[in-house]
Length: 414
Ligand SMILES: *Cc1c(COP(=O)(O)O)cnc(C)c1O
Image 1 (spheres, protein in one colour):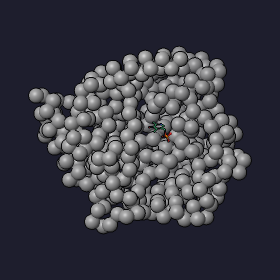
Image 2 (cartoon, protein in one colour; image 1 turned 90 degrees about the horizontal axis):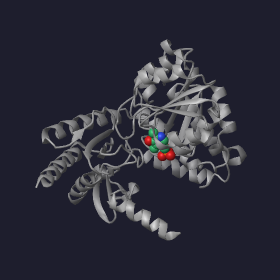
Image 3 (cartoon, protein in one colour; image 1 turned 135 degrees about the vertical axis):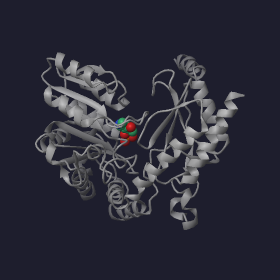
Image 4 (cartoon, protein in one colour; image 1 turned 180 degrees about the vertical axis):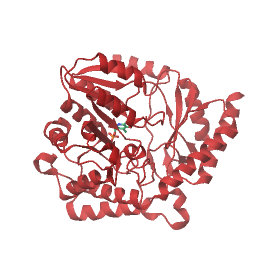
């Protein structure tokens, strides 16, 4: 029995596909950061005992160590304790969770929101609540694993559509005779950084009477006028409500975003028409049969959503860092391909798994941490460094990354 796993593990290792966890902690405890050390906050970590400048986190706005979020969590511990004690439908739903849901709905401009303890749980629980046997789901080929798992669990017919191919989607929807049709897509693709054309997708869904579920894990907080995400980026909905052109048309949209990335804490929410949300709350098994997230998480998130709005400079700075990085990489004339991206995710495609790990190791030797992403997370032959920027980074830190990449490139030529 264990011999079988040993053989399979050996196979993973020889294909350079075995993964390794590192032990990661902030180089300076966030509570101890002094004004002179601000550049360390959310950027510099001790990774397996070595201090590294990190471009690996999804902490796009640098909120995971923000003083306002830390204070909110501490106050909530004093008020509620540390555990939620039960699932939300039993007795785990606190005034903090309730307030968070109202504030999230108002922020993205949709009628009602439901908070889940994790994005994975939201997708895996919500999709089987929305569709079942005899229904059809149309899923982008690069969708996140938890969307795919949710679709499989639903037992609906799965149609995988080539990435961001609207005419293929049109044809697939046209050919389907299913009673219920659900189109499912990432809004910002997590390993590529490209933004989906939501208005065009909505128009297709209207034409074929389909629902549209978008997962905005990487757009929420980063895109949009106040950080409301991809819907605001496209002028559809946000803090000011639903835009005039989209009034009466949002009933077919189900919006989902995670809160462990730009929002800096943990969990996710789904926002849609009240009856859709009520149904998901009644039926999503990951909502019903899992202990609620602690109230301290909800309170930290409420603070995070306020900071997103109040500190617009974080998004401006993030865009400036993106421009600096893209310019620096262009000047370094690296033998690798930086994918086009106007988000915090800046993927540098290396090719083979071994080469990607080699470049990662060269950067590591220079004190810079960028994770290599390999199949099955990305297609075969497109192993990449997933450079992820945070508003916590400084321009000088981005310059340091570019210099390290140039070094790694010249080392790989030798
Ligand atoms: C990270 C991610 C999730 C999962 O969210 P968690 O809160 O980490 O469970 C879901 N969808 C996408 C696109 C993601 O990138």
